[in-house]
Image (cartoon, rainbow, N blue to C red; front, side):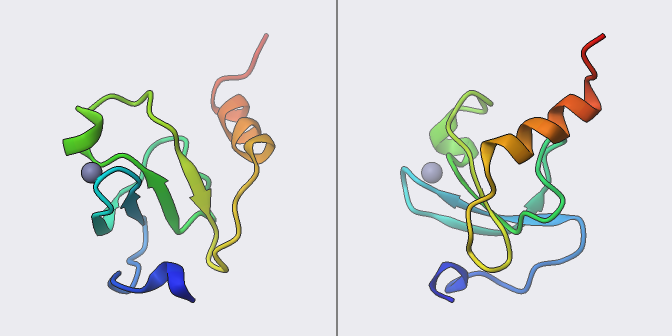
Length: 84
Ligand SMILES: [Zn+2]
């Protein structure tokens, strides 16, 4: 699978990061609180390009390189922060 070229094997509790700006690949970065558990790769901005902001775009891919839908991510967020 092309997506995984240049990454090391994924360790439990970690996720791979591909920076959409500088195209840097970082293996086994700590997961965010809202990262879908089955996501293995996130396409976003690295801390150098995103200036530490969490407002950048984030696209999560599963182990098959298939995008995880926004609806699924929303369900995870809603589970952590239920609307009363
Ligand atoms: Zn970057």
